[in-house]
Length: 143
Image 1: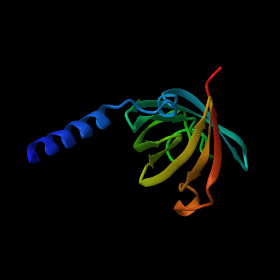
Image 2: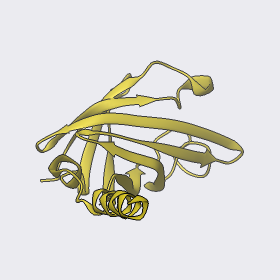
Image 3: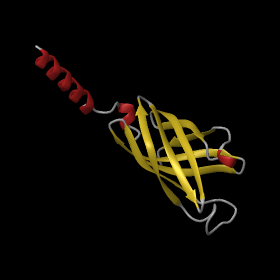
């Protein structure tokens, strides 16, 4: 009797682990155009996501921006950064970006929801001195 209960528990766990991700999570996969309003205007970036169960991986590609307009510390061309700690919970998602500029490291946490073909959420961290208020972003599929 104990063996059959253990076998049932193991089979149930295996079936749950192999269950496909919810439709909302599957809809996250692919390319997104993110927009964020800043004091200097609209900042855009490209988000490329891959979904594996309830895990999210991918990259965020931004233009360098910044005041120096070139080498190091806040300028230059497009920069692709791998996301880490990507998670999906129903229609909610979150991930972390760790950017390195010379000797400086900036960590930003993105969290949001998907509703059809629209993402809405906030970015925390990465402001001056590592803080700042959460900043809203929106996302849509590229046209």
